[in-house]
Image 1: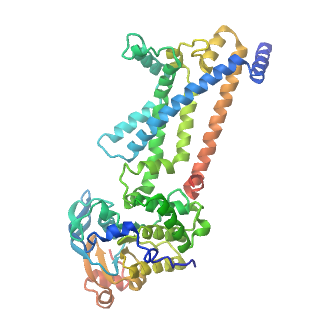
Image 2: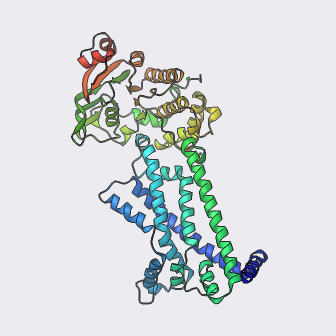
Image 3: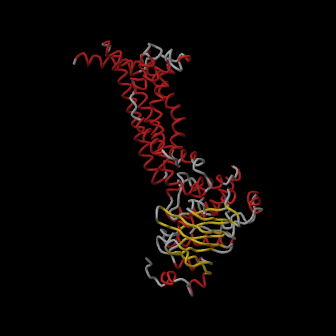
Length: 240
Length: 262
């Protein structure tokens, strides 16, 4: 118990004094996860919106598959990305394995279904409300998409924050494709795993504290946006 | 009561877009032949022929489930008929013809934007440029009595104000033909009066109005021509005076007599 208390005090000291190694790891984690979420948003939002407004045979199957992909096991994603990027893999010539880019790719794959699915649901709900009016304005299903995305932007921020939460807390995939190389691909989650196994609880706990703070901030933001979105659904305040 | 002097809003300053559109053939008469709409085995609309001329307001009356709202949604091109042909001025609908129509729904659909943005959106959808859009929106806000709430979210307006804004938005694009689907059914008398005045002024300006209503009094006040529907069929289409004095069809007679049609 005394060891734990001592480790916790050391951890807090690291956080408060702005330990260089700790913050380098935190910054790399944020850089990787934010980049993955930005790319996932660029692909997932139009994809989700297109799925929301389109009508084709098999749409329900695609929706179910997309929903299921939200629960992709990170280690399996890591394994597939590893195989693709390894020297003998189809993308081996790019020499991306054990780089932050490989970690971004893995996190992108994990976050994409979350962003696309939540976008589809949000846009589908709004489309049900707007559809006839937008058709009356002369907008087709697909030309309505920018309007729907814009008017649903507050709710869509929730989707992005949910995706970021998944990315920043992920360990299985990034440790496989990143290799947890010091000062290169070592992020918060992989460092916590490594330092714990080495018995260096201070750094692991310090990173744990930062990770928990980020998780709390993200969830608070999701909650605040959710409240604003609900209020906006009845009053429009959030969407003005 | 806000000023309704905005109608006609642009009569004195015809715009380039209007000049282009007026060079086109009129959308009227609006005709439909062999028009049906089915879901499964149920035939919800079944109309052999329909022709709506160019003047005044055509009111579509009938009991609940008669297919009135479906009919105007079919005519406006919001839903695709199972069979049949709809033509505007003898031609099938195209994008240009579509842009010369507008529709107001029973429940106003307000975009999650400000009052001004809701008006601007309709103009933007018509291809009106940014500068002209800003100018016309500002003018509409003043003429519609919305200038003090221009930046307020449209959804914070009262039901009556939202429906007036929906009417203003529909008329802002200077349509030749406007479909109204029971726009006053959930409004108080004062708001109903405001909407009816907007309709009357639009008709006076030359806009063709096709309006669904349950309200016999409203149909009397606004209508020049009556269409009566029952069980998805058009049972009667006559001038208003004839309809109220001597309805031709038994369902219309029963409806006007206050009987409940089944």
